[in-house]
Amino acid sequence: MSINQEWRALYEKIWRPEFFPEWASGLAESALRQDGDSWLADGAEGPVRIRFTPHNDLGVMDHYVDLGGGEEVHVPLRVVQNSEGAEVMLTLFRQPGMDDERFAADIKWVNRDLKSLKRLVEA
Image 1 (cartoon, rainbow, N blue to C red):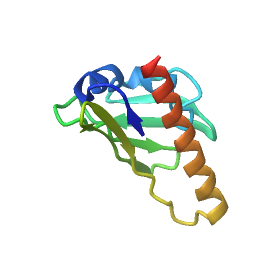
Image 2: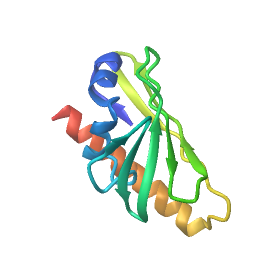
Image 3: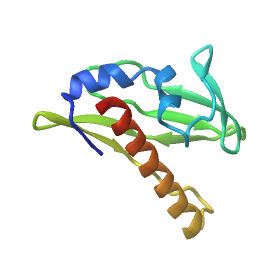
Image 4: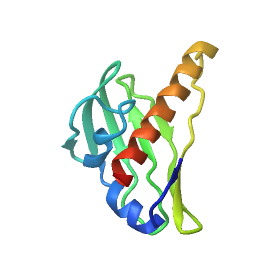
């Protein structure tokens, strides 16, 4: 998603875990609550535990989501420079056993969330 902001300034605005529920409805449907090195939230399919990469100079905002079964889903998320603006890139991996319909729905959900982020930070 192209965002009309300098990439470092954008990263500084959005890297904190507490900011994710403002735009990432696919990640959490509630405020995040810190629990040690991870965060707890109410997700679309029940409670989730999330670990985030620490703040860094590279624009990396990866997170690891545990939906309750102990297996973490890695979600790579990057903010990179694009001329005077930024690109926010989320890689969505198709999970084992996920059918075409569910994967397509997840893609739509991610796109909707990235559009929400764009509206939020460009407002």
